[in-house]
Amino acid sequence: MNLVFFGPPGAGKGTQAKTLTAEFSIPQISTGDILRAAVAKGTELGKQAGPLMAAGKLVPDELVIGIVEERLKEPDCHKGFLLDGFPRTIPQALALDAVLAKLGKKIEHVVSLEVPDTVIQERMKGRGRADDSPETVQKRLDVFREQTSPLKAHYENLGLLRTINGVGALDEIYAGIRKSIGR
Ligand code: AMP
Image (cartoon, rainbow, N blue to C red; front, side, top):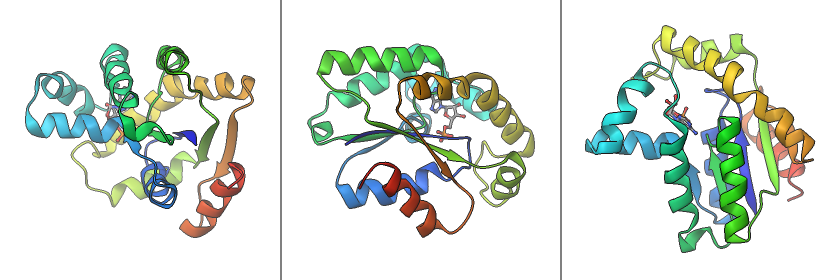
């Protein structure tokens, strides 16, 4: 089961991804989590990514593509994987397709969690992460709209897009996701 979770920051991707990856015993690959760990450790990657993340901007494509390429080669991805927060740009999506082709794999479903901006703003108020100031949240939503939304058309054209209403009870959203991926 090779999946991509797609949606604006605060859509609930991480929460739903945790439930799904636990149930199906596949790794959750969150570029945001990997980058935050690098920032916490103070690695070279962390030093490059930290200021961009704090400003709500995207980290350069080549950095995240490299991270994901290495991670997908790990043996625990053999049974499948769930990408959470990657790809976020068209170049990332094209690079992902190329990496997967090399590995003899392909994406089966792109699950898009749909949540209106007003709901996201409310949700983010309660989250309190360092990159969650109202200005940063707005910047991240703008970045999503400008750089990440165009991916929907890419995956729709490939017949992979599964659109899910991300507002409501967690278990109902989860049921919708499972249905959309035929599990
Ligand atoms: P997330 O936890 O997925 O919302 O990611 C937090 C932050 O990490 C983002 O606002 C970006 O600065 C950075 N980031 C995570 N994933 C990516 C990606 N695929 N491309 C570029 N930047 C990313």
